[in-house]
Length: 156
Length: 156
View 1 (cartoon, rainbow over the protein chains, first blue to last red):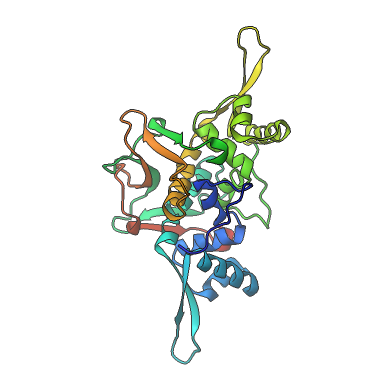
View 2: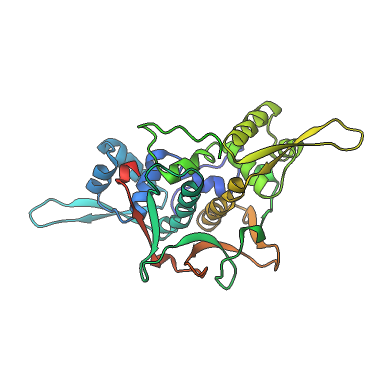
């Protein structure tokens, strides 16, 4: 991957905290979310999110720099070349974390008017959820999951 | 659940954004993480995280108010009553989102010295991962997952 969030004594090495670095800014978060639902063109991000061109340019640059998106150029007949932004493999894998956050929010702070997004299988159209699975890929009950902190918790 | 993050025009109704409200403050996040790995006593949170008593008191109060933790009193022989903090069912379910964030971070920004936490089955001791599963509880490939935004993306 590209540049990583800086790690300092005030910013301990912690996988979760480092992942959140990419998501905790509201605009970055919405850009990643829309990228995960299929948006690729600069103009579509701008129109869908109602974000200013300047702000969008900066946030996209940071996501390219962080290895989440990659920039491509495309050209339609009669138009000048324009930019599109595509998820890298690492960016695409954020779908698990975003889906899990979404699922939790829909369950425990249900928005007015129902869920804001749905997770579906492309092949069957069936509803999907995010869960822990074992080495054979079978879902396990949450009560069976143990999170073991390996390093001192304050530094973990 | 208890009090929810305020929803304003600048803070659109979005399940993921609302979930992140509970996690994006660094201390809140570390407290939830340690709670998910089994910490319950005020004094253990304080010692593990190296957080000041004042700060810990405020963050724990906010998590109780938000319906993530619940406060109990316990007493050991010869000591005064002390406080412990236990995950509510909603708080316990954050284990999926935190596990997913952790997994992403370990994979794409591997910390020096290896992962900071492991996810294991309590019953078999086997390694667990977070994934999308179908209605039968079978893991599906990430390429088969489609996230469908239901409401206008900027407001979703």
